Figure (cartoon, helix red, strand yellow):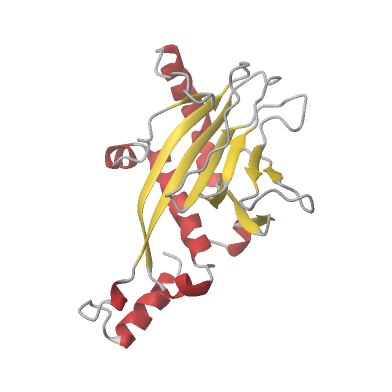
Length: 232
């Protein structure tokens, strides 16, 4: 991937990222049609915390990835972006080979109903979380539908305690999973706000610290650490 495709937007000194995925555009009408068909068949239920209507976290099952082209494309592009992001890491973790061992995905439909106004939350213990915006409706108030973030440190009178990222159709917004966040409601929207939400779980390979491991040889470890920095 081109580094210019991954656009960094720091908030509170913490990076978030926007990643355009033009490969998904040909599938948009198909996905919208499938979601409306599921809606009419009563598949979607209210989210208990008020976020809207959410599917189960089973989008990226092996069967779906194999059988549904847009699911495979979306998972591949999310893993590609997360791999590029993790290659930018600092500190001790920069030396550790890593593996994205699990990716979860689900669909969130946000309507203009008055009860759709979910609380702050995070996605820990995932490492990186993302939203691919399939549909972002027009609203009267430009603050509607924003993805809001809360400063992880205690509130301060000297700096902003909240920040917003504007969703863009056809792009992923990716952020560290520990950040508290919430989507703003869309009371004036005449259509759905549709996000495909994703979590990436990362294993940091520390086996080299075990003298009996495959990485007890320093050269083998250095090769593995270097390989962890290369795009996969």
